[in-house]
Image 1 (cartoon, rainbow, N blue to C red):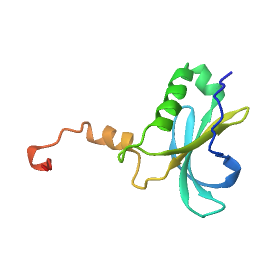
Image 2: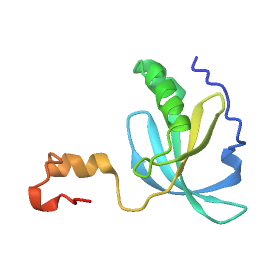
Image 3: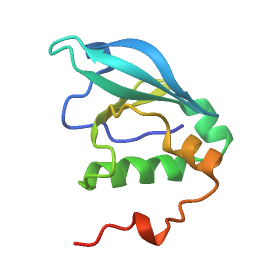
Image 4: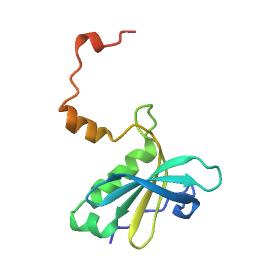
Length: 121
């Protein structure tokens, strides 16, 4: 069974109204969540423990949570916290409108920039 130490910053899925799905994968779904207290929108990643185990992704999920809890960088989505129940792991993430980066890469094929696109400071 997947067991991850619960978040210390009091992230609870019950504090959010789940709205539309904005991403869907093999063992996770990302929904927009509206915080019931402040009305702000967040991305809520909902991962199925059974699928994580079946696909042998336990270490990857531990690493994802560990890295997101420690990193603070303008181009990386901030994690608000995480929690779990018997079936799911929930990650609360900053909501960034504009689509999924992986889908953009799949369409584009690469991130090679022309010299004219570089910004020099």
